[in-house]
Image (cartoon, rainbow, N blue to C red; front, side, top):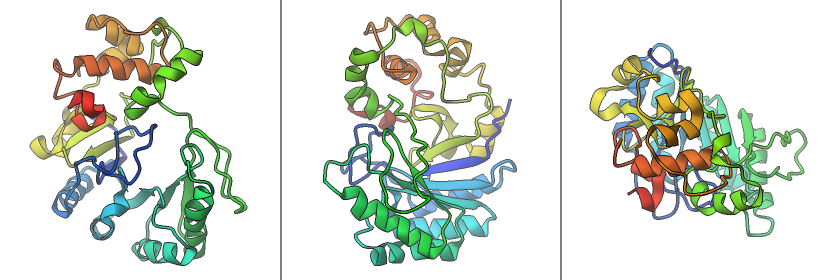
Length: 306
């Protein structure tokens, strides 16, 4: 059954000025893998040719590290009739005026969503959230940009009325979070592997969105690929997708991360796991040699998966 995609999220780069412990894709200052303008425009053309998809996002890593390229690609996406969203950590918002300079092109392009990452969970520097996130929020409001906050792990504390919703997303223990945060969390209040009998976060049957980076892997979940777009083309990958036949995905549908361990005789290394993603990530890491085309790209498995 073909995918029911409505959005493609471009992982413009895996590089980021931060190396957050809760990052799904092991982003950081030294992380490699950045899409060129030619790749982005190719991906946009392929996306625009899939009738069900109407939206693209530019994210990372931190996409504003390659801001002129992102803006050019965003203009092209709008010209191809696609809605455009951008996700950023606001590292550039040293002042409101600076932030307006960075964001003004998005108002001209006519984006439909600007998602600003909150620093509330991971900031070590006092007032970092006030100095950066607040500046970006105020600039977006002044420019009339459609804007929302990505609050993961903790609620942002901004003195800007109507901005913080209190809808805080929980940390999912995959990517770097599975390595840096999950073991301690599992020790504190983890659950045995026998309890993780479904994937609570991804709908592999009706996947509304997928991620695509410089590696070309169309990721249904970070580190689970439906196929390579550069090799086979997006339309072909979407059309041939069969979740009940694709290794790893079919087991997750059948019985979650626990079934994944059972189907491939992977003995869980721990008595307790932080969440379903934690067990799934560690099991997938053990299976990468067996299914390198599905358990891709390597960037989503960090140094251990390289």
